[in-house]
Length: 187
Image 1: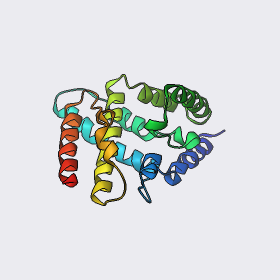
Image 2: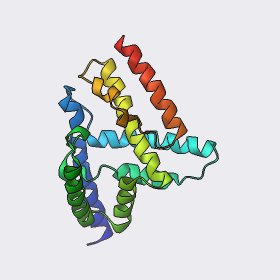
Image 3: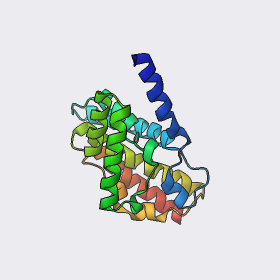
């Protein structure tokens, strides 16, 4: 298969993320929620800001690697859909990961698969940026939907796991600000 053919096939495959809604929003009564692709775009926007902040603080971080991971972090959901956290038991999460790994190994390049694995593991600084960006984007979207009165979203704010800052100061600051904004909306 030529590089051009692979690029077309991979792009077409990942394009399906644009038509897959984020299930957590649907389960909480949000009509016409963001797609997985829209979420991934938002994660990239947040990740870029986190990279800039880390660099301003004097930390070396590979911004291209972060953005590549952010683009691919939910790629497996093209096969499994978006299974929300409350539905994921440890056994289900392990089974999903095995399926995702197998499917992605057939579709992504070895370099892309390695980035996806790194993002899932969350051990490197770059992967921690993506993990924090994922949660920041989700809570910013929860704030947007809260302001629009588009669902039952209290549990997003009550669940401390939704505020995993991954040791990043700006993420910690953003979560504190989001909590204050959400509390003001609740009044």
